[in-house]
Amino acid sequence: MTDRLSEETRGVLIVGAGPAGLVLGNLLLAAGVDCVIVERQSRAHVEQRARAGFLAANTVRILTDAGLADGLLKDGRQHDTCAFRTESGEFELAYGDRGRGEAHTVYPQQHLVRDLVAEFLARGGDLRFGTAAVEIAGLASDRASVTVRTPDGGSHRLHGAFVAGCDGRHGTARATVPATAARRHVRDHGVSWLALLAAAPQSMAAVAYAVHRDGFAGHMARTPDVTRYYLQVDPGDDPDAWTDRRVWEALDRRMRTDVHGPLHRGEILERRVLAMRSDVLDPIQYGRLFLVGDAASLISPSAAKGANLAVMEAETLARALAARLHGDDERLLARYSADCLPRIWRAQEFSHWMIGLLHGPTGDGDEAAFLRALQHARLESLRTSRRHQDHFADNYVGI
Ligand code: APR
Image (tube, rainbow, N blue to C red; front, side, top):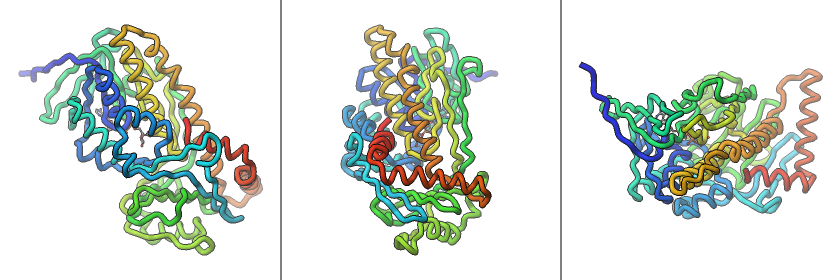
């Protein structure tokens, strides 16, 4: 006997409840567009997954306009200065006073996700946890479908006018786009970071980027009790080989705490190795499937753009879907990919430039010395040129 497949017809089918899917779902609900979100993980899992935390001014504007920013306006912290430490000393760049004069709001991504889930449910949204999309089909017809595995192990098929693929880098949406239908631009930057969360208050007011012969080190505030640290490590390094002692020794050396003062230490709550990779699909649409967030493009975390791009794309798509489903106006939807890709590439360009700024060669040969001198010149230009600082500020906070 075969299991019966249950079926259901809805408006927009959203796969994935990260920042991309949740912002899109909330905006669609607000626009009166029927939608359903399916999420493979449990609610507790998505609400505790620590990721990024730097929200750009445009992101805060979108969330505020949509009534989704109560938590971040209450508990988020304004951040407008970053510092660069090199062998020549430290300089601070008050980017909130440069360029367009915008600051970041620091608010841990899992808190934003928690707020977006609560708001979606409070507005009567249909969000199904423990429900994984296993197949996306019918994308050339007006009856697209997402087949899901339900929490009890059954199969269920949702039909809808459109599918929003918000299921991240390894999701089903991206895998559904045939290789011949989209160009995939991929870059492995050849650099890896050990991402650490320490149960310790921040050690300095600013985000600090340390450029060192041993490799890059970074310090970023998260909450009053938790700080994010990064250490450049060899690609493929085992995070567990980085014992607490080794981590703090490397941070002290690269952050030059003998000159600039000690770091607050605390239990290391998380250690993960992240490869700096970029991956952009073009177009970010395939028939009735629209990709949003990491499903559309992967950006290295060097400039904290991932979540901000996801929110920008979600807003663009929500507007386009509402125009199509309410007003039968196809124009915005037809332009979704063309509207988003220039901004995605702008963010990629800046992120790529940041990688070059922060990571010098570690060797001692002539070429390594040359590249280090270039890196030093880049940092000097940023330290001394107000025009360069304006450009940096606009790109660092904006998209
Ligand atoms: N079915 C349903 N849900 C799925 C499936 C699937 N087959 N595969 C993945 N998911 C879910 C994941 O469990 C996750 O909750 O999709 C969600 C994708 O969320 P994110 O990975 O956070 O991606 P996105 O919403 O695009 O995030 C935007 O924020 O911090 C950054 O790194 C993050 O750059 C990313 C950005």
